[in-house]
Image 1 (cartoon, rainbow, N blue to C red):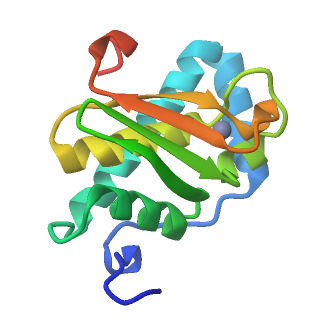
Image 2 (cartoon, rainbow, N blue to C red):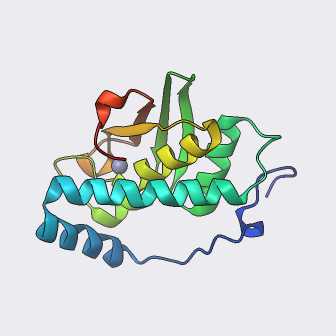
Image 3 (cartoon, helix red, strand yellow):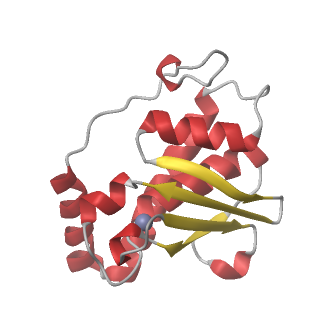
Length: 161
Ligand SMILES: [Zn+2]
């Protein structure tokens, strides 16, 4: 780890290794129990809570948002993140080798709902305002990387809180 980088191992947040079959199983069972839309939203919300929890355990005052996101994603193991656009109104990030996409496999729609929730929760906790995220491109759909777009625009999900 480079000097001065954020170290999530110094937090009280517990992490464990999740086999791909577990992620596939959760997604498939949710879809069969509550339907695809509600299942995806459940994964988003779960990820959101995870992102919030991690941020609350870290001392981030001396870091800039892009550095926080890139460092966290690398250490948590969600994939390699690159910030494409960063303003209060709109944030766009690219994720290479998304572990969620690799776990789920080929699909006709984006599948990284836990990851997009974690991004939204992380950013929301840092900024202090709720962000929502959509996934515009996904490795599971054959794209070279996943792309997430985040905004405080409540029209994207008026019901999720
Ligand atoms: Zn994806």
